[in-house]
Length: 166
Ligand code: GDP
Ligand code: MG
Image 1 (tube, rainbow, N blue to C red):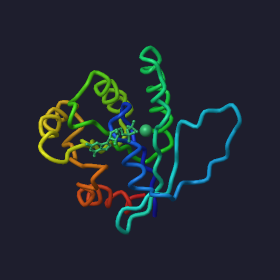
Image 2 (cartoon, helix red, strand yellow; image 1 turned 120 degrees about the vertical axis):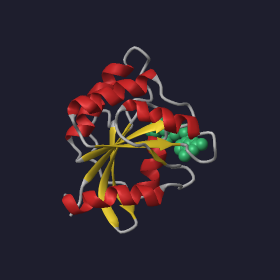
Image 3 (cartoon, protein in one colour; image 1 turned 60 degrees about the vertical axis):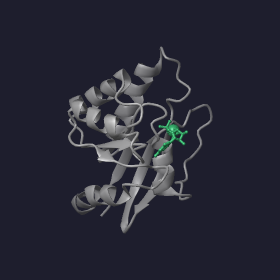
Image 4 (tube, rainbow, N blue to C red; image 1 turned 135 degrees about the vertical axis):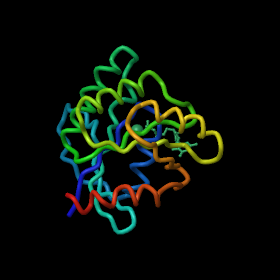
């Protein structure tokens, strides 16, 4: 039994840091198509005894402000279509931004299964953002620190039921 998990969120919230923590060096082989930007990165994720496919939405970083919403929408739609559930990552230190709200709306409208993750929650600096995250209407945020490896036990407990379902 396995499932595909997409990591979604605006640039700089720590998606790739979380991807790297879950995948390590086990990057899936992707066939390079010339001229096509690979903006979804896929790898074999591990957390405890769980095995799953992880998709990092990596194509937003070089978007200009003008093209960001459109690219976000396109990438997010693709990632959602290719996955069983989404980890929607927000930055607990910077709090909720308008772009986070756009993402939340896309995900709510799709009716996709979402786990809300408040990254950068190590120490006390993340507390305000954690409470703000409730406003997104996506349930209780899971406080983690991708960089420091905190909250991985909670993430495991949240993902475990999916491993049985899919
Ligand atoms: P992405 O654009 O969403 O893929 O974000 P990145 O993974 O590239 O991370 C953006 C920045 O946030 C980098 O400077 C990371 O080192 C930093 N970062 C990622 N996770 C954490 C975390 O748990 N705590 C803190 N304080 N910084 C983090
Ligand atoms: Mg990234």
